[in-house]
Amino acid sequence: MRMEYDPFGKEFDSLETLADAINDVLGCPATIEDNNHRLLAYSSHNIQLDPVRIASIISKRVPEKIVSSLWLDGVIRQLTESRGPLRMPANDEVGIGQRVAIAIRNNEDVLGTIWVMENEKQLNDRELFQLTKAAQAASTKLMQLQNQRKKKEEEYKYFLWMLLTGHFTAPAQIKQKARDIGISLPPLFQVFVVQASEEMEDKLARQIRSMLEASPDVQTPLHVIDHNRLIMLCSPSFQQTIQKTYTKSLTSLIGKLESAFPQVMAGCGSLVEEYEKAQKSFQEAQSVLLIKHNFPDKRSRIIQYSDLGYYRFLPMIKKEVSTESFNNANLQHLVEYDREHNGNLVDTLEVFLGYDCNVKVAAEILHIHVNTLNYRLKRISDIGRIDLTDMDQKVTLYLELRALKLAES
Image 1 (cartoon, one colour):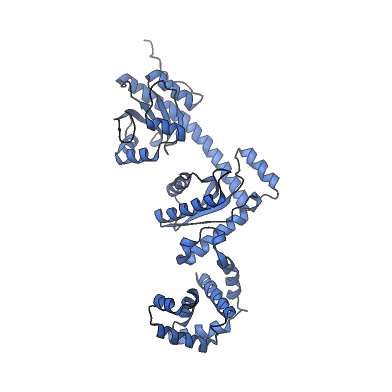
Image 2: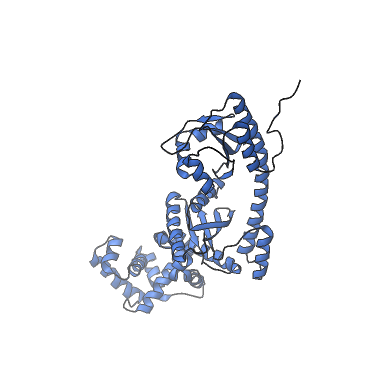
């Protein structure tokens, strides 16, 4: 008995070759995507294309509105649950013609999807069976690509850790290592850290990176997950991107990020050209997160290290005020009074100084009458021997109060 020829029962040298083979066998243009809706390959075509296929080819990924529509209509769920081809009717509202799709699987894992256009013909049962064979061939190829990508990602992660920990001693070493692993380093970069309240899960990291990649002005060529942190190199997408435009986009992205994921906060080190300064930028990003964690009311204003202002000196001041050899007598008098009388003079002083010594505003924040605040301020002056008209003394006290708050956490 003669065996029927299986056009997909061979090794394909690339996904593009496989996509063209699907078109040849089925007579319909095909696209192959990964499970993040990125376009991996597409066949040649000699028919009129719908807007979605054109947009996917141009941007190398499925338009976001189509992905949303597929989720809302239950198509993606059906695909992940189905073992065979699934026919999807045309949707003129979003500009997509009739298609047949099949999930590319490795056992229970979905690696991607094959989409076949049915604009001019409808696949019969035999052709649908051939499509399942094509999905098996695609699975083999995607597994190979996935293994190659994992190896490359490990090389990238190792390289990033080398940068973050100051492993390199000369710029030439960095450039050579980048060439060895095949990565093109952008001319400007900064270290960008997103810190979660708990362990950073892969799914959350992917969602965060997907949000960043959606911006036309920002790119993240390297990243690594470390416990509850997603650490990235962040840079302008194009050399001609104006730094002001890039910074504005990044600020907007971090605002959206912290709004969409309340369990995370983000911060950046300085934007630099020299990759031997990556360790310093990393340390600066961690300083930003330290301040944002301890002073939540400042979070929306602090994005990059340059936004910290005097807060960047607080860790050094904290170290000084934490030593047994240092003791601010004025402040200590207030602390002891509050402890003995269950008072709140220290808190009152901090709010008063923090709101630029504005009695009216400080009273509102403390929920007390202006006269009550004035009485407390007199007590602060008398007990702490503090001159509230002396700017040097006020600045010193305020910085020490902030540093103590940092030390308490």
